[in-house]
Image 1 (cartoon, rainbow, N blue to C red):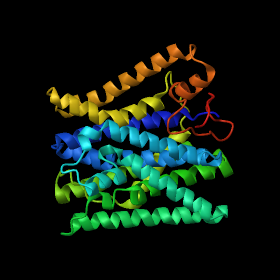
Image 2 (cartoon, rainbow, N blue to C red):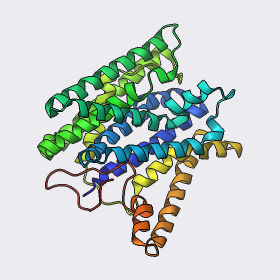
Image 3 (cartoon, rainbow, N blue to C red):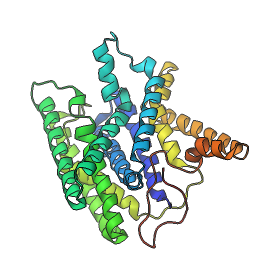
Image 4 (tube, helix red, strand yellow):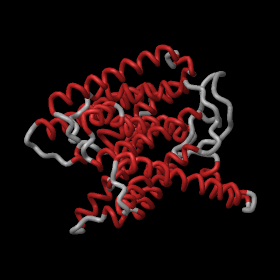
Amino acid sequence: MARIYSVDYLKLLVACVVVLAHSGLIVGDVGALGYVLGFSYARAAVPTFAVVSGFLFFQTWRHGRARLWLAKLLVAYVAWVAFYLPIWWPDPATPWAVAHELIFGPMHLWYIAALFVAVLILLTVLTVVQAPERARRVLFWLAIGGLVIGTLLQSIHFFTPVDLPMNAYRNGVFVEFPYAAFGFLLAERLERRGEGALPDHRHVCILLAALALLRLAESLVYLGMYGPALDFPPEFPFLAAAFSVVILLFTLRLRLPEPPVNIAFLSVLIYFLHLFVMIVGMRFGIDGFFGMAALGIAVPAGIGLAILRVAHLLEGRMPPLLRKALLRGILRLSPAGTARPQGPSAPAGRGEGG
């Protein structure tokens, strides 16, 4: 199946933005400019990742590989939770505290736990609602409802004396599912109607620029009201959702060349390894924003490139089945799946979904 290479580039960009956002949160004092950029654009990184995940999951579901995909996601989650165990392990480690961390996901691993829940909701709707048109409507309105309820809960936490835990509104139901559902529905629409269902590139650029300006205005309003505090107020949900979806639409309209290496694999390593690298860096005195950000991007990317190099060297020396099992995803495939281009103007290049 042909890849849309622009989506791979988007995932790499978003992973790097996540590193920048976490660097700012760790440093704490980002100033007015850091606040505005963080609220307007860096905050959109994880929701955009969720839209992309839902978009790519459509082909996985369409080809009947949803259960296998969920099993792989669970294995990945367990592996990364074990890797970060010495960092997230609660003190005191009561059964409830441990269960809470595992259910909602410790640290940045909350994204995998939330994605698992989001996909389960998607699959439940698609299984229960057999009529395709009705299933699309149900998914859309459930996503809208999730966004609204999540925003209401965060508003209660921010604007009232009620102190809600972050996991009450940042979870698979109120964040991950709505955005993943929008991405899934976009992929389904492309499957039905082809690339002609997308607005043309000029209109997408105008729309993206308008949404970016609205996001900037929103952050400036909050900056004037509350100052550059890192306890961000809730976003306007429909503006946030539209911004992330249009970023993907803009990406789909790009025609980028095949990257020399599997940058989707590098994006995964950057996302999951950067916090560990930054924590180690702080032990050696690297605690500035730019130093931590550079370390959090460069070291995981370097490790990923080394893995790809070793995988290429070993590829011809392994039995076919072992080579397929161990190297297929690393050398040629995105760990999050692939997307199928629509229409004759799809970019060249061959790959497989998985």
